[in-house]
Image (cartoon, rainbow, N blue to C red; front, side, top):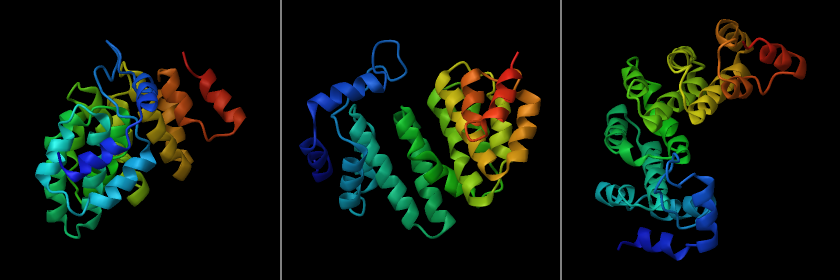
Length: 236
C-alpha cells in the first residue's frame, strides 16, 4: 500500500461513510449500487491531493481508480486535474485526456464526473475544433459517459462563451430518462443563461413545452419569479 492510500485510510470515518453511501445511492438498483465509502470530505481529499499529486505516477493513479473505494477514485481524479493544469502544451494535455478517457469506467458517480470532466476533457477541447468525442459519449447509452459529455461543455461556456455544443447535446439528450441527466442539462443551460439570457430563452422557446420538469426548473433558476412562472406554465 502506498503513501496516498495510507493517507486516505488515516482519515476514514465510519459514520460519515454510512451517510455518504445513502446520499450517493449505493443500494441495490440505485445509480451508485455497490460503491464503497470511507467517509472523507471533499476538503480532506483536496488536502491529500495537494500533498501527493506531484509524486504519483500513472500506475499509482490507475491503482487508485480501480479501487472499490470512492475516495481512492476521487483522489486519483483530483491528481489528474492537478497534473493537467500543470501541462503547458496541447500534446502534453492530450496524454492526460487519453488516460482519463481510457479510465472512464471508474468515473462512476456524479461527483466524480463533475469534479473532473470539464477540468480535463472540457479544457482540452477549448483549443480543439473537433468535439466529436462529446457526441460519442452522448451516444454511448451509458449514464456517466453521457454526463461527462454535457458537463465537459462547462469549460466551453466559461472559457470561450461557446454555447453550440451545450445546446446541441441538450437537444440530443432532452428526453433522457434519468433525473441526474435532467439536472446536469438544466445546470448547463442555466450557465448559458447567466452569460447570455437571449440564447437560453431561444432554446426554451423551442423546447420548454416538452422538457422534463426538473431540467426546466434548473435552467430557469436565475430568472425572476414572473419569468420562471411563464416558462413553467409553458410545459404541456
